[in-house]
Image (cartoon, rainbow, N blue to C red; front, side, top):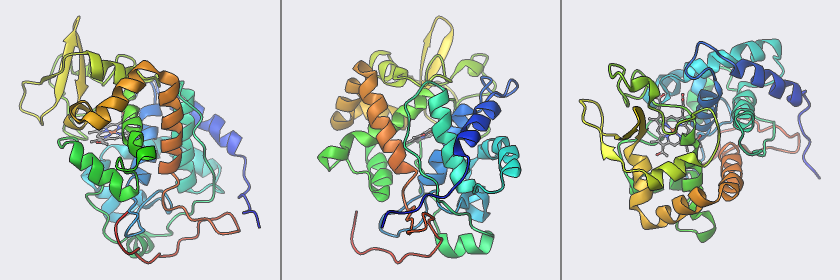
Length: 306
Ligand code: DDH
């Protein structure tokens, strides 16, 4: 029997997301990048083996996950979406966050990412703790390298050892064509630097494109001389762009590099692979039953490795 699809005016929600994206007093005038980051951090905690984490439940609203330093600054995204949730209480936070990320990508010129409703929300902190267990330290650390990327995405089920999937880690990393680092959130970048306000990864950080791959593969990136965490920079005509050590790892590793170069040359290929990979990301751990809803039941951990 085909699974039911939960009912709701999702096109109306998409239109409202486009409206709240316009934030003249926030960053580059757009909430888009931080909405995409919310969808990613809500989903990227999934573990295939332990079968916990992921976007279902919207656990990031509660306890340790909300307080995780990796999620610093995401309250901006949650607050931007709050009026939509209040006006449309039928939609769960978990569905709204993932739909907002997908719609923001589209609104910023990116591809259509497949999205389906049906996620549920944890009712309270104790339900979240009971279902999720300890999922701290699962999001990637920008100071590390290629093997860390393989560990983090391998835990979710993305693995570059499988031929058909090796490009997904690189494709997802292309989201750094959006937004910027904030010294008060991740510690990267420098608020005291006169050039700091123009230090995202690419020149136009609210436009989804393959610029990240073009710049990563063609500019000369040098370690930044400062007291903050290790990061790389390229300054040209007074404009400072940056890369994290994890971004540079994509060029150091021959398998990842092959895909960086492909995406730098072919934006359509990047859009196609990104849409597939992001679509999978927001589905991780979302197990719908025939009602179309992904009821929040604690699953047993799986045997073995992904
Ligand atoms: Fe990221 N990211 N990300 N990222 N990310 C940051 C910002 C943004 C890492 C670290 C950082 C993905 C992968 C990685 C976005 C999307 C995605 C910041 C800066 C850090 C640090 C946060 C701040 O200071 O505000 C690391 C490490 C990885 C990795 O190694 C894999 C992925 C997979 C995505 C995705 O969406 C698929 C976006 C968007 C931003 C910009 C946020 C903003 O507020 O602007």
